[in-house]
Image (tube, rainbow, N blue to C red; front, top):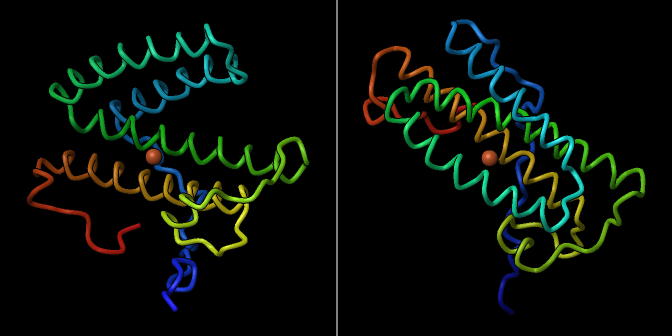
Length: 167
Ligand SMILES: [Fe+2]
């Protein structure tokens, strides 16, 4: 009988979710404050209507181009901003999990594509999916803060790839 995805692997959730890169330099503080300001519209538009979705699409169009230019100007600031965005993502998914625990969001069975992609157990639920996504965000946080640190050291990323298992 063929082996099912959930029989081959256990998700590793051991990453520290609470780790925060303390802003040290001026650019770090700019990055941190930028992300904190970006949170304001996110909090206001948490329940999106169609025109709010349109706003998101428009902002994404602006953000993509602005971020592209920013990356050309200062990769260390760009990576630091993404590092802080990922810290916010962890926070958002933690709130999502709390809403599931509180019964505000139904803990429905996970879709098969999510079970396959994240190698979850066959009876996995939405809560399991959100839990592994949140761990992914913690990895994104670490990789981006790492990339910013490398740029701070005046090195290129291709000279200093994140070591395997880097947290
Ligand atoms: Fe992410």
